[in-house]
Amino acid sequence: MNRETALHAQELHDAFIAKEEVQGLLENLERLSTSSQLSPQKYDLLKIDYQRRMAESVSRIAQIKNVVNSHLQILKQQLNSSKTELESTRAAFNIGNLSSSDFKKIEERSGKTQDRLREDISILQRFVDAKTAAQADQTLLPKPAISVFMLSRRRLALAITIPLLLIGTFAVIIFWPPSTPVTIVAENSTPTAQAHTISTPPTLTDWPSLIEKIKPSVVFIYMPGYYSYTAGSGTIVDERGYILTNYHVVTDDKDNIESKIFVYLCEKGNIAENDTRYPATVLKRDKGSDLAIIKIDASGKTLRAIELGDSSSLKQTEEILAIGYPNFRWGSPSVTKGIVSALRNEDGINYIQTDAAFNKGNSGGLLINRLGQMVGIPTYIVKEAEGMGFAVSVESAKPFIESVIGK
Image (cartoon, one colour):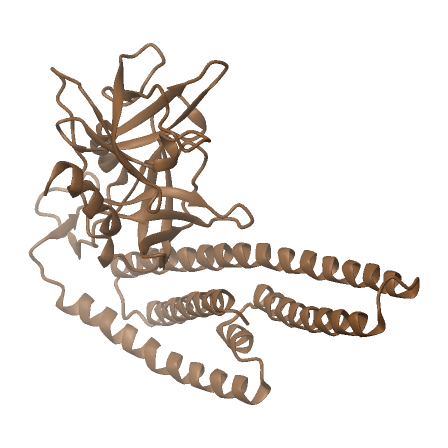
């Protein structure tokens, strides 16, 4: 099993564990409800939270399986190609166009390749068919003796984890600070009527408000051509008109800077073709990191720069949004939601892997965290897989930005 497959297997295993833990919590919650140990209000709050966590786990499992299934199809194609090539080689040997020693070498090498592919296909198929954490363990460690051990260890972990989570949950219920109560009063009741008081649950991220705040920082980059045009996205990183985007957005097929570059500002929540467009100048670009800084002169306009976040603090499964202008569409910037699938380093550049949808035109846009801070720059996708987008992290982009506009 290669490293990437092992990583996906571990992610699937962890997602199954999360699902099984929440399933245990739901079952215990129902038992406590029937024994009247919980008030209806507390029961409802906990059940909503557990159901949300269950839905997230199920969604995560499906996402991982989709990615792995794409790899599985590629391996099957490689196996068929290897078989076809071997048959062609055998035909050449049979008519005397290939020596016996050369054919044996090719046959041996092809046999090893096919054996490896069959083994990987078998592992990935078990991976896709897995429905529990124990089956995911068997994918990671296919030997029966080890699988039994892993299964026992996992059951032990669940036996310990679920009671601890329950203890923690009910400790929160009992000791939750009463400083922010929500009082529920029956309709048409008088102020002296007895009220039920429950604790306020943690607030969720107000994504719509964050997006409205961030829209003015996202720009549409337009490069007109003789017969057509190209376009991409960018983010204002300094109120003086400095915009961060991708190298490939402002670079033509011959590796030259595009002859004409214009920027449309999202001043009213959307852009239109007849809006004012600002000529842009490329100040710096770097092919290795696929980053570029361009500048516009928008005298008289108050530009809103994005706040840069801390991408190094991101954790797997943390929610993020991707914002940009995919498929060269006028109007409001497009927003897609996903999670941090993995944090990777390639050739010294830190990348955020996400399942948030990236499309042509998203390049140069931004990923934001729950605080509305920029944590990444959408850069490329893996076409052979589903839900595998990569964004250069702000951690890697900051030195590049500072080299142009200062700290």
